Amino acid sequence: MEFIFEAIDWIGEAFKAFIGGFARLFLTSLLIWMISLVFLLFRELFTPGDLDFKEYFLKVWKFFKLSFEVVAYGALIVAPILIYTSKETLVYSMVWVASFLLSFLFLYIRKQTNGFKRRGSQVRYNRFK
View 1 (cartoon, rainbow, N blue to C red):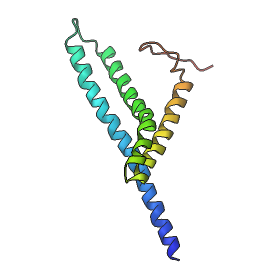
View 2: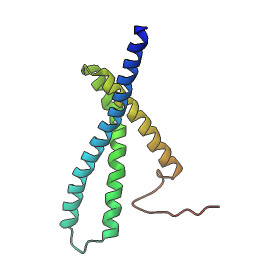
View 3: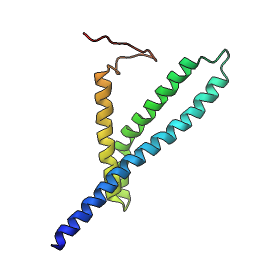
View 4: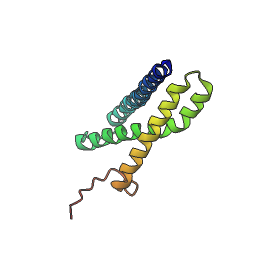
């Protein structure tokens, strides 16, 4: 009977680490996005000419998407290194699983929206056939 309680505790800890893995990836993505916003703001401030809000917000959205993708793809490489060098193997293995799921999701979205073929910040409107 005690085995069942230990298994339930282990499942609870694994689920908590899994949700924590997503949270770590999310917070890291937001931190990278905020740093890129400061970089983008200074770049826009020191370029000659007027500020085009539509173009600026497209760049902000592009950096937002890029920060989440970079963190998900980068965690595929960094998480296994942290698993072997850290004592918190469960936490970093769940970060690796979360990054694997997010990377698969981002690649699937890019494939469905033809994101690999776009150049620049072009926006396409597809009609339903």
